[in-house]
Image (cartoon, rainbow over all chains, first blue to last red):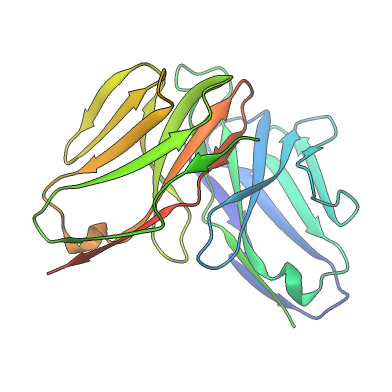
Length: 118
Length: 109
């Protein structure tokens, strides 16, 4: 089956610093990846849609200058949380859509990255 | 808006059957997913419905009525390990999935 990895699985950083999270599709190519954020005991909130070779599409209320997304290849998307603050502490999950497969409606989720900003 | 409603919490007994409902806005509907999520982990895919009717996968079944904007996830022969959050997610027109609030299911012995 399709496997999506994320790195790091957890990270602690100081307020004001930037953190980069990687999302990789390991055994398939993904033209589209999605970034979600999940606060404790809440559901997943879509932050942005990342398309290979083009600018990401951000959901309403998500600051594009704060959450920088780069999708430079068909297997890698990165999310950089710039000038992180404690309120950015959350579980960040990416997902990838299989290119052109019959099951192309299915998204495969990464294991998530827990970010704690102190 | 793209509203998806699910009950916040449910409890059930081991061996029982539980039905988790999900209602959504019908305009532009293009598929509904159910995911299971254990605390601190990523969601795992359970089922996908795009046409009306029942999809059965072992102990889990999912039903869809597009005209009513309604789906349910049916879990049979509940086990303790089924204690988790169950997320209903809907795709409208585009590829992106919008998740409901999730239903936390607790299974008691």
